[in-house]
Image 1: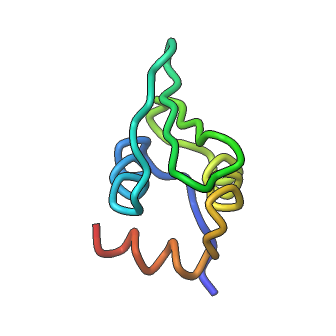
Image 2: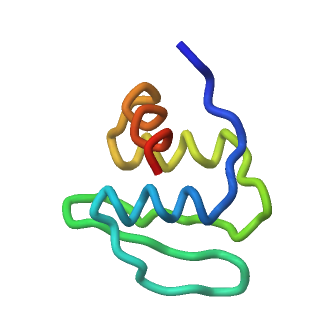
Image 3: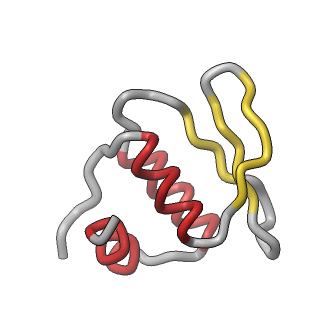
Length: 76
């Protein structure tokens, strides 16, 4: 299985919005997203490249597998 590499924050934002998340607020260089049923918010820093560990943490909160993420992000 392919590994998740760093991605741009805009691409991660497109993924989150297509998955049903909504933008809640922004503070500094961090954007906050939410979705009904989530225990905690999703935090996306506006870095040029978001490290893989941040992407993986957000996937864990969403309950999405790496495989599902890679399949969906490929089509964005």
